[in-house]
Image: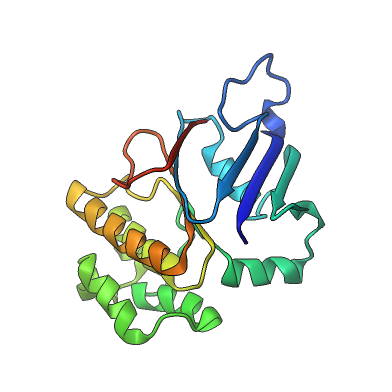
Length: 214
């Protein structure tokens, strides 16, 4: 996948508003593979909805979203499974981890589906993000910032053309944010991938090619 294009896309819940001022909603916008983009937004402007629309998790929007020119509303379930395993990785704001499983088990659930990362690589990411000592701890017993780092590692355990990260450092200090940025940059460069980060203020310190105001 090389291009994700939005054509006059708008959440249905916004349809009754007199005007929407945005660089993305009700416009024609394309995210390109290999580019790093930041979507800055105020709370309630639809940044998490944007991620859910692109991931195919929700369809309550107007307009069209295309992957390489093809309308994603036409995708079958099996097509989505393939895209989410090989082309599109998503780190949701609410993380969507399994609280009763350990940090390691949460990551391995994803990696077992993709077979992408070896055990040594996953341990290295855990160590760099200072969560290796917590790998056998249940997610529900970890802080939200620790859970964010686990979810980030899980998002890396697949091949991807694009990776979306919805407020990935809202509960992290600057040091861990820099470490996450370095790891993300290395992995995206290795895969030639596009990176899209959303933020309501605090964002990953990356060299952004484009910045959108949602």
